[in-house]
Image: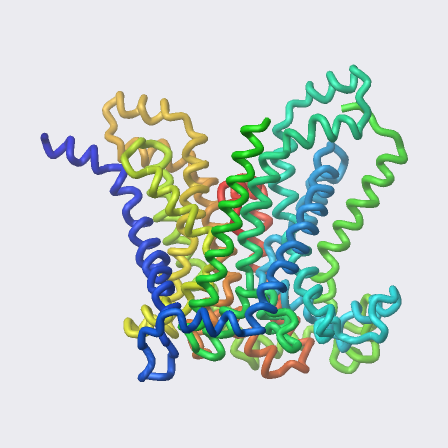
Length: 296
Length: 277
């Protein structure tokens, strides 16, 4: 084999090698190290730590009410955020999937929240909920949601809705954009044929639009659910998990354990559980999908 | 599609109006408080526009705080991350688009998996890994970490741009005697320029917005990025709302510029990196 042929065979690897190396060193190796931390006593400021503790962290976690509370909040946070983002995003996509004067400008404006950095979205909404400078407490009181014009974020029972609203505001464009792209790929003549056959708008939506959108919906909802379950920024910024852990989700709990308590071992154990849950969720969905396609 | 009646369009515009107001109101309020003089802040709390406007908050943020330094740090980090990620991603995306090779399936799979796992999971190991190398409290450390985080998404995005360029073009050039590199330089690069620019914009926006790793890795204010600086400011001087919001508006400027520029590519970008915020 000549040098030229070796070089030709190696060519695609030369293109991809830098990226693969970087990802392995900065993401995969730390991931594996993180998994081993879950079984070790790793505390940053304690040089005597580092012993193998086996399943100790997981036993501790099982008895930790803060962990179970964070797990319940993760479900509420993820389900509410995804449902609202998806529902409103679908409505927005359907509205934008028409030709009308001013569409380009409106599209630019409604998609703008997507570009706002998450820390700023969080701060911005925290300020809106703050009775000192924000209007929301007064409006919520006028609507009868709150008894007094207080900060929603300091109500242990309702505080989680603050970050959820910020998350919905920030995430609608994502769903709207992906669904709009899928809508625009539906051939127009199918609608025309259906209209000639006398199908009304609702029938056309159910029989044509929904089946065409279904694959895009399924994949975006799956990926988004995982992403939002991992998304701690808004909660860390708006409430730091408080008051009294009422807004703590697993992802923010991991961050607090690592960043404030510097307990890397326990943080990694919680992260391992979160990773396992997300993997189980993804696998369950894939099995479900396989079962459904076999039946269909 | 069939024409709709007047009542349909009335509802259509009404709903869109509601979406526009929901999208813009928080940003409007940010701007409003940032130009409200301190003495009016409380007396005119819920008014939609202050009776008097001032640029004082902006002036004191720029002159008397560390925000110019944080801004500079963020510009350095986000720009370098965008350049390096796009360079790596262009190479990888080209490889994915133009070659069938052993292990490609696994490499693409690897890139997709990195988009799925909780990044907070590696926050502790990364800290322990970078600390002995002197890469904590350093902008270089952040650039390395952010580049790794953004390369998978950027590679898949770049691949979609390369896929859109017909293979015949380079093959014709190579038949004419150009080697692959020359074909790449003379044909592919000019055609991918918009794609390269869009990828730069996406990565810049992502790196500009990142908070948690910056918070964990860079605690010294000399190496703080804008999000970290703003958060420290908020927890220290949480009464000076005018200044905080003025700083917030300043942090918005670069991303808004990039947004106007990349919004044409949003569909492609979000479909390629479907998991990416």
